[in-house]
Length: 83
Image 1: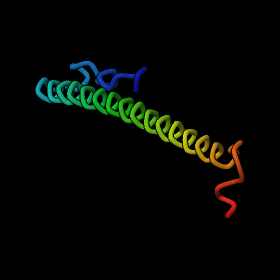
Image 2: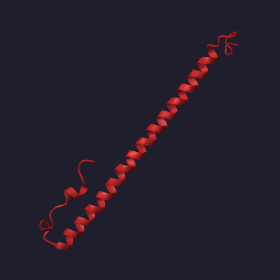
Image 3: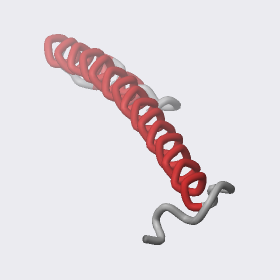
Image 4: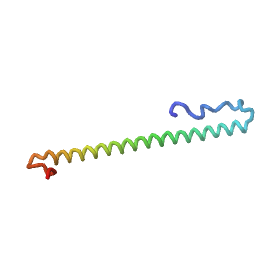
C-alpha cells in the first residue's frame, strides 16, 4: 500500500468517453486512496500498540520469574515452598 497509490489505477479522462463518468471515477479513486491511507495508518498504529503489549507482558513475566527464583533460591534458611 505504501508503494502504489489507488489514484494510480485511475485512467485518463478521455479513456472513459464521458466527462461525468471520468470525474466520478477520479473522485472515487481520490476518496478510495484516502481510505486506504487511513487503513494503512491504523494498521501501523495497531501493530505499534500490540508490540507495546508484548513488551509489557515480557517484562511482567521476567519480573515474576525473577521473584519466584528469589524465593526458591533464598540464601537464608530452607526453601519456604518446600513445606
